Length: 379
Image (cartoon, rainbow, N blue to C red; front, side, top):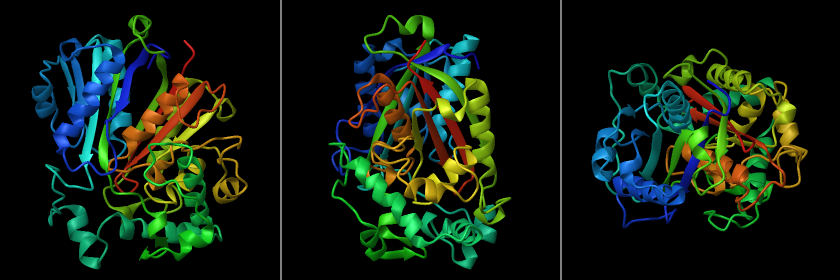
């Protein structure tokens, strides 16, 4: 991908987030899309490319009155939207379309018009994992995290510290679901979900959504908002079964996706001012910091404990409060992208002064997929 050839010109989340029982899933998509269109000063008729996950692109295009010349319905879990950004940038550079709308919406809490989650008994997981008792992310993610803790001689207190620092960032964000301070003891004392995860190490379950509009860098200067340029992108997948990860202490998809994004961007880790790592569960930022190369294997817990990612730290991470305290409707990647864009625009609730480069990194499924997008506010 050509550096800085594509830019974000519109970005917004749904008007309300958290508990929104008055909106169905497709209405959340539309609300976010209309907010992003207003942010960019555009109408639905100005859009000729559309990408979405959770709903069919066909449904979203029809609902909004859009006739696209380019469509992407990639659905690989929470990092789908990082991949949509990557694919949209390629499509714009190739001339397949000019202005792409990426939408997300989920009624994760209220379950109004939401997509069902059927388990296909003939799928790989249905045959080889579900019969043995793993059901849902909290129990599935225990498989790698227990090996990770043992391999690096870490403790549940190390996981709890991730939640504590995420809450510090959330306290700075008026739209966060939870803002009250947390201690390690608070996290460890919350309800046990699946060892070693307590309730406060697990993501929120909320309603909400977001949307992003991309166009060429040449056109971006004519829009009302400060352009945020796509500097580098990466993507990869590994396995639909968490039991079959190549290495329980590292995500191959994370490594491939992150390395590709950094290679495209032509930057070093020292150039990064702001970082978003998908935090559906407290262990994910540990894996992200290591697999993206910000920390050596086994050293991310100490990096966080020493407050490097906390307010005032040298690598501000998950500054919106993350999936643990801000919001998490199911596929969190869109919210990580939104915060990176806000930081690059200079409009974030917990704005990092002088930030020029932000990395937004996502996971899909149980370490099954990964997408990475590197943004900059410098043309």
